Image 1 (cartoon, rainbow, N blue to C red):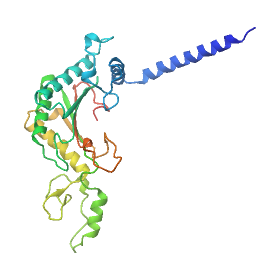
Image 2 (image 1 turned 90 degrees about the horizontal axis):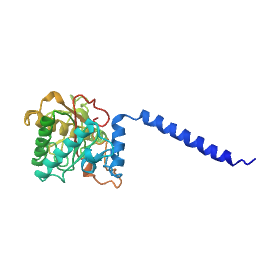
Image 3 (image 1 turned 60 degrees about the vertical axis):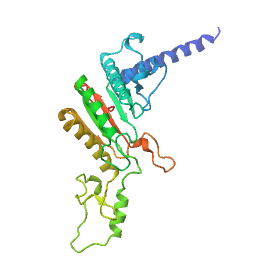
Image 4 (image 1 turned 30 degrees about the vertical axis):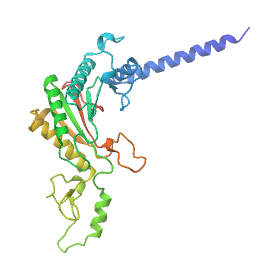
Length: 273
């Protein structure tokens, strides 16, 4: 009797095991991740810079997709198109990147479009971007997470501060200075280092990213009329770069502010924070 049936049977068992393994993995994947994966294949394999997010311009319209998109995904696409339209009207389409998932919409303000290097004050383009963000929040009744980031070459490190402290003479009445990483009260705060002339404050990367997020939030709430209770601001220093530091040169792309728009009923997950 021929033993060829054993080969066919083993192939069948292997395929069956692979099928059940795939079903088990899909059952463990959150719904928003499944929507992002479905959007990736529906758009012909076009992915955004963040991996699992597909640019709204690459997503098919709901009526053309093989399966109807969820209401959350449709809302995200609508918000993303609204933001892209206003940015084009303001001639800022090259300054921002808008991506959409079922969880919400991410608007990333590119390098220098809101803050200059080592600066924490908004520039005119940054104010326009925030006005557009405020319009989207009000029109679609959204909540917002503001995320501040710094370039790894901005500010100064704790090691720099310690070296300066070791080099500086101590007076008899001087005590240990507070950590500069957590001093956010401005140039009069003893934790913020000044330059040699004693004029300009020197902030750490954490200070810079925190103050940028705070400045954007302050403008949205105090000037653009957004309700404070629906805006959360967080900061990362240089801990989440989008461009790796490979040659020791500054990467301006990492000097950015991100805005994650989401509906109040949609719990903020890792896409937001």
